[in-house]
Length: 369
Image 1: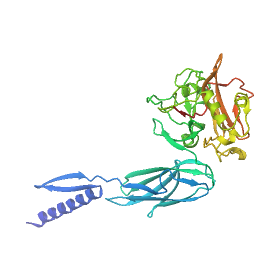
Image 2 (image 1 turned 90 degrees about the vertical axis):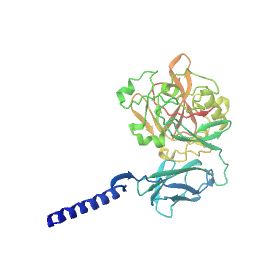
Image 3 (image 1 turned 90 degrees about the horizontal axis):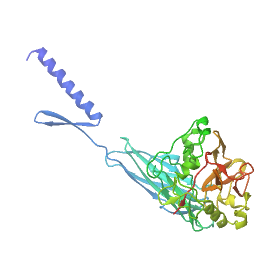
Image 4 (image 1 turned 45 degrees about the horizontal axis):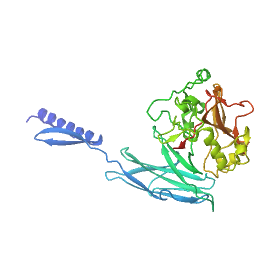
Protein backbone atom coordinates (compact mmCIF):
# COMPACT_ATOMS: atom_id res chain seq x y z
CA UNK A 1 0.00 0.00 0.00
CA UNK A 2 1.42 3.37 -0.99
CA UNK A 3 1.62 6.35 1.36
CA UNK A 4 -1.37 8.09 -0.26
CA UNK A 5 -3.67 5.08 0.25
CA UNK A 6 -2.48 4.63 3.86
CA UNK A 7 -3.22 8.29 4.57
CA UNK A 8 -6.75 8.02 3.16
CA UNK A 9 -7.41 4.90 5.25
CA UNK A 10 -6.20 6.65 8.39
CA UNK A 11 -8.49 9.65 7.72
CA UNK A 12 -11.47 7.30 7.27
CA UNK A 13 -10.70 5.65 10.63
CA UNK A 14 -10.55 9.03 12.36
CA UNK A 15 -13.86 10.07 10.78
CA UNK A 16 -15.49 6.82 11.91
CA UNK A 17 -14.27 7.31 15.48
CA UNK A 18 -15.60 10.90 15.42
CA UNK A 19 -18.97 9.68 14.17
CA UNK A 20 -19.24 7.08 16.93
CA UNK A 21 -18.34 9.72 19.56
CA UNK A 22 -20.89 12.19 18.15
CA UNK A 23 -23.62 9.55 18.19
CA UNK A 24 -22.80 8.53 21.74
CA UNK A 25 -23.06 12.05 23.19
CA UNK A 26 -26.32 12.68 21.36
CA UNK A 27 -28.00 9.78 23.14
CA UNK A 28 -27.58 7.29 20.23
CA UNK A 29 -25.77 3.97 20.37
CA UNK A 30 -24.10 2.31 17.38
CA UNK A 31 -24.88 -1.36 16.71
CA UNK A 32 -22.91 -3.43 14.12
CA UNK A 33 -24.75 -6.28 12.36
CA UNK A 34 -22.85 -8.20 9.57
CA UNK A 35 -21.00 -5.10 8.51
CA UNK A 36 -24.05 -2.75 8.58
CA UNK A 37 -24.51 0.10 11.03
CA UNK A 38 -27.82 0.78 12.82
CA UNK A 39 -28.62 3.55 15.33
CA UNK A 40 -31.12 3.26 18.16
CA UNK A 41 -32.17 5.98 20.57
CA UNK A 42 -31.67 5.09 24.23
CA UNK A 43 -34.88 5.96 26.11
CA UNK A 44 -34.40 7.89 29.33
CA UNK A 45 -36.13 6.24 32.28
CA UNK A 46 -38.23 8.70 34.27
CA UNK A 47 -37.19 9.00 37.92
CA UNK A 48 -39.50 7.92 40.73
CA UNK A 49 -40.27 9.94 43.83
CA UNK A 50 -42.40 10.03 46.96
CA UNK A 51 -42.99 12.48 49.79
CA UNK A 52 -42.10 10.45 52.87
CA UNK A 53 -42.80 13.12 55.48
CA UNK A 54 -45.25 14.44 56.50
CA UNK A 55 -47.86 11.80 55.75
CA UNK A 56 -50.81 12.56 53.50
CA UNK A 57 -53.77 14.09 55.42
CA UNK A 58 -51.55 14.91 58.42
CA UNK A 59 -53.01 17.37 60.93
CA UNK A 60 -50.50 20.08 61.84
CA UNK A 61 -50.96 22.78 64.46
CA UNK A 62 -50.38 26.31 63.18
CA UNK A 63 -46.87 27.51 63.99
CA UNK A 64 -45.28 24.07 63.74
CA UNK A 65 -42.12 23.72 61.64
CA UNK A 66 -42.58 20.92 59.12
CA UNK A 67 -39.67 19.11 57.49
CA UNK A 68 -40.85 18.04 54.04
CA UNK A 69 -38.73 15.02 53.10
CA UNK A 70 -38.67 13.46 49.63
CA UNK A 71 -37.30 10.15 48.40
CA UNK A 72 -36.19 10.33 44.74
CA UNK A 73 -34.35 7.73 42.64
CA UNK A 74 -33.18 7.48 39.02
CA UNK A 75 -32.15 3.99 37.86
CA UNK A 76 -30.35 5.15 34.72
CA UNK A 77 -28.86 8.44 35.85
CA UNK A 78 -28.85 10.99 38.63
CA UNK A 79 -31.37 13.33 40.23
CA UNK A 80 -30.35 16.91 39.51
CA UNK A 81 -32.98 18.75 41.52
CA UNK A 82 -36.09 18.42 43.65
CA UNK A 83 -38.39 21.48 43.68
CA UNK A 84 -40.96 22.08 46.42
CA UNK A 85 -44.35 23.78 45.94
CA UNK A 86 -46.94 24.72 48.55
CA UNK A 87 -50.44 25.49 47.24
CA UNK A 88 -48.99 25.87 43.76
CA UNK A 89 -46.30 28.38 44.79
CA UNK A 90 -42.60 27.49 44.41
CA UNK A 91 -40.91 27.71 47.81
CA UNK A 92 -37.48 26.15 47.32
CA UNK A 93 -35.26 23.49 45.75
CA UNK A 94 -32.90 20.91 47.17
CA UNK A 95 -30.13 18.55 46.18
CA UNK A 96 -29.55 15.33 48.12
CA UNK A 97 -30.75 14.85 50.83
CA UNK A 98 -34.02 16.16 49.46
CA UNK A 99 -35.90 18.21 52.02
CA UNK A 100 -37.45 21.60 52.70
CA UNK A 101 -38.26 23.11 56.11
CA UNK A 102 -41.61 24.93 56.22
CA UNK A 103 -42.57 27.07 59.19
CA UNK A 104 -46.36 27.21 59.31
CA UNK A 105 -46.49 30.28 61.54
CA UNK A 106 -49.01 32.68 60.03
CA UNK A 107 -50.24 30.13 57.48
CA UNK A 108 -53.99 29.86 57.02
CA UNK A 109 -55.87 27.08 58.71
CA UNK A 110 -57.39 24.45 56.46
CA UNK A 111 -55.94 22.13 53.86
CA UNK A 112 -52.70 22.85 51.99
CA UNK A 113 -51.23 20.98 49.01
CA UNK A 114 -47.54 20.04 48.98
CA UNK A 115 -46.02 19.02 45.63
CA UNK A 116 -42.48 17.92 44.74
CA UNK A 117 -41.19 18.01 41.16
CA UNK A 118 -38.14 15.84 40.45
CA UNK A 119 -35.81 16.26 37.43
CA UNK A 120 -32.99 13.99 36.23
CA UNK A 121 -29.90 14.86 34.17
CA UNK A 122 -31.69 14.07 30.90
CA UNK A 123 -34.67 16.28 31.61
CA UNK A 124 -36.99 13.52 32.81
CA UNK A 125 -39.61 14.87 35.22
CA UNK A 126 -41.94 13.29 37.76
CA UNK A 127 -43.87 14.52 40.78
CA UNK A 128 -45.73 13.57 43.95
CA UNK A 129 -48.45 15.35 45.93
CA UNK A 130 -49.94 15.23 49.41
CA UNK A 131 -52.47 17.33 51.33
CA UNK A 132 -51.98 18.37 54.96
CA UNK A 133 -54.40 20.14 57.31
CA UNK A 134 -53.36 23.08 59.46
CA UNK A 135 -55.41 23.84 62.57
CA UNK A 136 -55.10 26.52 65.22
CA UNK A 137 -53.15 25.49 68.27
CA UNK A 138 -55.64 23.53 70.33
CA UNK A 139 -58.26 24.24 67.65
CA UNK A 140 -60.97 22.19 65.99
CA UNK A 141 -60.06 19.97 63.07
CA UNK A 142 -61.67 21.13 59.82
CA UNK A 143 -63.06 18.41 57.58
CA UNK A 144 -61.43 18.99 54.20
CA UNK A 145 -61.03 17.36 50.81
CA UNK A 146 -60.37 18.43 47.21
CA UNK A 147 -61.95 18.41 43.76
CA UNK A 148 -60.54 18.93 40.24
CA UNK A 149 -62.04 20.61 37.18
CA UNK A 150 -61.78 19.60 33.52
CA UNK A 151 -58.63 21.72 33.06
CA UNK A 152 -56.87 19.74 35.80
CA UNK A 153 -56.99 22.51 38.42
CA UNK A 154 -57.36 21.11 41.94
CA UNK A 155 -59.34 23.04 44.56
CA UNK A 156 -59.31 22.61 48.33
CA UNK A 157 -62.77 21.99 49.78
CA UNK A 158 -64.18 22.28 53.29
CA UNK A 159 -67.31 21.05 55.05
CA UNK A 160 -69.27 23.83 56.78
CA UNK A 161 -72.36 22.54 58.52
CA UNK A 162 -74.05 20.19 56.05
CA UNK A 163 -72.52 21.87 53.00
CA UNK A 164 -69.26 21.12 51.20
CA UNK A 165 -67.82 24.37 49.77
CA UNK A 166 -64.82 25.03 47.56
CA UNK A 167 -62.15 26.80 49.62
CA UNK A 168 -60.61 28.36 46.48
CA UNK A 169 -61.96 30.42 43.57
CA UNK A 170 -62.75 28.75 40.25
CA UNK A 171 -60.21 29.39 37.48
CA UNK A 172 -61.32 26.96 34.77
CA UNK A 173 -61.40 28.13 31.15
CA UNK A 174 -63.69 25.28 30.01
CA UNK A 175 -67.01 23.79 31.02
CA UNK A 176 -67.14 20.17 32.15
CA UNK A 177 -68.13 19.07 28.61
CA UNK A 178 -64.95 20.64 27.19
CA UNK A 179 -66.64 23.73 25.73
CA UNK A 180 -64.35 26.76 25.89
CA UNK A 181 -65.44 29.84 27.86
CA UNK A 182 -64.84 33.06 25.87
CA UNK A 183 -61.86 35.07 27.11
CA UNK A 184 -62.44 38.84 26.95
CA UNK A 185 -59.46 41.03 27.82
CA UNK A 186 -60.11 44.41 26.15
CA UNK A 187 -61.96 46.90 28.40
CA UNK A 188 -64.21 48.20 25.61
CA UNK A 189 -65.14 44.67 24.52
CA UNK A 190 -66.01 43.80 28.12
CA UNK A 191 -68.02 47.01 28.48
CA UNK A 192 -70.05 46.05 25.41
CA UNK A 193 -71.01 42.63 26.78
CA UNK A 194 -74.74 42.02 27.05
CA UNK A 195 -76.38 40.44 30.08
CA UNK A 196 -76.47 37.06 28.35
CA UNK A 197 -72.86 37.02 27.14
CA UNK A 198 -70.48 34.43 28.53
CA UNK A 199 -67.01 35.79 29.33
CA UNK A 200 -64.13 35.47 31.75
CA UNK A 201 -60.83 37.19 32.43
CA UNK A 202 -58.00 37.08 34.91
CA UNK A 203 -57.45 40.22 36.99
CA UNK A 204 -55.45 42.80 35.00
CA UNK A 205 -55.41 40.21 32.18
CA UNK A 206 -52.49 38.61 34.02
CA UNK A 207 -52.68 34.81 34.01
CA UNK A 208 -50.35 34.65 37.03
CA UNK A 209 -53.19 36.08 39.11
CA UNK A 210 -55.19 32.93 38.42
CA UNK A 211 -53.09 30.84 40.79
CA UNK A 212 -54.04 32.97 43.78
CA UNK A 213 -57.30 34.74 42.92
CA UNK A 214 -58.91 32.52 40.29
CA UNK A 215 -60.86 34.04 37.40
CA UNK A 216 -63.66 36.59 37.08
CA UNK A 217 -66.79 35.44 35.23
CA UNK A 218 -69.98 37.05 33.97
CA UNK A 219 -73.20 35.61 35.39
CA UNK A 220 -74.00 33.95 32.07
CA UNK A 221 -70.60 32.26 32.06
CA UNK A 222 -71.06 31.06 35.63
CA UNK A 223 -74.55 29.72 34.82
CA UNK A 224 -73.66 28.25 31.39
CA UNK A 225 -77.10 28.98 30.01
CA UNK A 226 -79.15 27.71 32.98
CA UNK A 227 -82.25 29.50 34.22
CA UNK A 228 -82.35 31.36 37.54
CA UNK A 229 -82.83 29.18 40.62
CA UNK A 230 -83.87 29.95 44.20
CA UNK A 231 -83.83 26.30 45.24
CA UNK A 232 -81.63 24.73 47.90
CA UNK A 233 -79.75 23.03 46.32
CA UNK A 234 -79.89 25.11 43.15
CA UNK A 235 -79.49 22.13 40.75
CA UNK A 236 -77.44 24.40 38.44
CA UNK A 237 -74.08 22.85 37.56
CA UNK A 238 -73.05 25.86 35.46
CA UNK A 239 -69.31 26.29 35.43
CA UNK A 240 -68.74 23.84 38.29
CA UNK A 241 -67.12 20.39 38.03
CA UNK A 242 -69.32 17.31 37.73
CA UNK A 243 -70.89 16.51 41.09
CA UNK A 244 -70.83 20.19 42.11
CA UNK A 245 -73.13 23.15 41.49
CA UNK A 246 -73.37 26.93 41.68
CA UNK A 247 -74.99 28.05 44.97
CA UNK A 248 -78.36 29.78 45.06
CA UNK A 249 -79.15 32.74 47.28
CA UNK A 250 -80.81 30.29 49.69
CA UNK A 251 -77.61 28.24 49.92
CA UNK A 252 -75.59 31.35 50.76
CA UNK A 253 -78.12 32.10 53.50
CA UNK A 254 -77.68 28.56 54.87
CA UNK A 255 -73.91 29.15 55.07
CA UNK A 256 -74.34 32.51 56.80
CA UNK A 257 -76.75 31.09 59.38
CA UNK A 258 -74.36 28.20 60.02
CA UNK A 259 -71.70 30.81 60.85
CA UNK A 260 -73.95 32.64 63.31
CA UNK A 261 -76.45 34.92 61.52
CA UNK A 262 -80.11 34.85 62.47
CA UNK A 263 -82.59 34.45 59.62
CA UNK A 264 -83.71 38.07 59.96
CA UNK A 265 -80.08 39.20 59.59
CA UNK A 266 -79.46 36.89 56.62
CA UNK A 267 -82.65 38.15 54.94
CA UNK A 268 -81.67 41.82 55.28
CA UNK A 269 -79.96 44.23 52.87
CA UNK A 270 -76.48 45.72 53.06
CA UNK A 271 -73.77 44.47 55.41
CA UNK A 272 -75.42 41.89 57.62
CA UNK A 273 -74.51 39.94 60.74
CA UNK A 274 -71.58 40.57 63.06
CA UNK A 275 -68.34 38.67 62.39
CA UNK A 276 -69.51 36.09 59.84
CA UNK A 277 -67.46 37.82 57.13
CA UNK A 278 -64.32 37.54 59.25
CA UNK A 279 -65.01 33.85 59.72
CA UNK A 280 -65.01 33.48 55.93
CA UNK A 281 -62.04 35.74 55.08
CA UNK A 282 -58.48 34.45 54.85
CA UNK A 283 -56.01 35.35 57.57
CA UNK A 284 -53.76 37.33 55.23
CA UNK A 285 -53.78 39.26 51.97
CA UNK A 286 -56.48 41.83 52.77
CA UNK A 287 -55.73 45.54 52.44
CA UNK A 288 -54.91 47.63 55.52
CA UNK A 289 -54.98 44.70 57.93
CA UNK A 290 -58.58 43.83 57.13
CA UNK A 291 -57.90 40.11 57.42
CA UNK A 292 -60.29 37.55 58.84
CA UNK A 293 -59.97 34.62 61.23
CA UNK A 294 -60.95 32.01 58.59
CA UNK A 295 -62.38 29.88 61.39
CA UNK A 296 -64.83 28.40 58.87
CA UNK A 297 -62.09 27.29 56.46
CA UNK A 298 -63.87 29.10 53.59
CA UNK A 299 -60.60 30.99 52.89
CA UNK A 300 -62.07 33.92 50.95
CA UNK A 301 -59.41 36.05 49.27
CA UNK A 302 -59.77 39.63 47.95
CA UNK A 303 -59.77 38.85 44.22
CA UNK A 304 -61.41 42.13 43.18
CA UNK A 305 -64.00 42.44 40.43
CA UNK A 306 -64.48 43.60 36.85
CA UNK A 307 -67.25 46.15 36.46
CA UNK A 308 -68.12 48.00 33.22
CA UNK A 309 -64.75 47.16 31.66
CA UNK A 310 -62.06 48.07 34.21
CA UNK A 311 -60.70 45.89 36.99
CA UNK A 312 -60.95 47.16 40.56
CA UNK A 313 -60.70 46.13 44.21
CA UNK A 314 -57.80 43.64 44.24
CA UNK A 315 -56.79 43.03 47.91
CA UNK A 316 -59.85 45.07 49.01
CA UNK A 317 -63.00 43.16 48.07
CA UNK A 318 -64.40 39.97 46.64
CA UNK A 319 -67.85 39.17 45.26
CA UNK A 320 -69.37 35.76 44.48
CA UNK A 321 -72.22 34.97 42.11
CA UNK A 322 -75.39 33.09 43.07
CA UNK A 323 -77.85 31.38 40.72
CA UNK A 324 -80.66 33.75 41.75
CA UNK A 325 -81.64 36.78 39.70
CA UNK A 326 -83.76 39.68 40.96
CA UNK A 327 -87.49 39.29 40.32
CA UNK A 328 -88.67 41.37 37.34
CA UNK A 329 -85.16 42.79 36.82
CA UNK A 330 -83.61 39.99 34.83
CA UNK A 331 -80.42 41.91 34.06
CA UNK A 332 -79.50 41.76 37.78
CA UNK A 333 -78.44 38.81 39.95
CA UNK A 334 -77.79 38.30 43.66
CA UNK A 335 -74.28 37.92 45.01
CA UNK A 336 -72.26 37.89 48.23
CA UNK A 337 -69.57 40.44 49.08
CA UNK A 338 -66.68 40.50 51.53
CA UNK A 339 -64.56 43.59 52.15
CA UNK A 340 -61.38 44.53 54.00
CA UNK A 341 -63.24 47.18 56.03
CA UNK A 342 -66.25 45.08 57.07
CA UNK A 343 -66.52 42.08 59.39
CA UNK A 344 -69.99 41.27 58.05
CA UNK A 345 -71.20 39.75 54.78
CA UNK A 346 -72.62 42.03 52.08
CA UNK A 347 -75.88 41.48 50.20
CA UNK A 348 -76.23 44.22 47.57
CA UNK A 349 -74.84 47.70 48.34
CA UNK A 350 -75.91 51.31 48.41
CA UNK A 351 -75.31 51.55 44.66
CA UNK A 352 -76.88 48.19 43.73
CA UNK A 353 -79.92 47.75 45.95
CA UNK A 354 -81.44 45.08 43.70
CA UNK A 355 -78.40 43.02 42.78
CA UNK A 356 -75.50 43.52 40.38
CA UNK A 357 -75.50 43.64 36.55
CA UNK A 358 -74.92 40.21 35.07
CA UNK A 359 -72.13 41.47 32.79
CA UNK A 360 -69.91 42.30 35.77
CA UNK A 361 -67.02 39.92 36.46
CA UNK A 362 -67.20 38.18 39.85
CA UNK A 363 -65.57 35.16 41.48
CA UNK A 364 -67.21 31.74 41.71
CA UNK A 365 -67.35 29.17 44.49
CA UNK A 366 -69.14 25.84 44.06
CA UNK A 367 -71.06 23.56 46.45
CA UNK A 368 -71.04 19.78 46.36
CA UNK A 369 -74.24 18.04 45.24
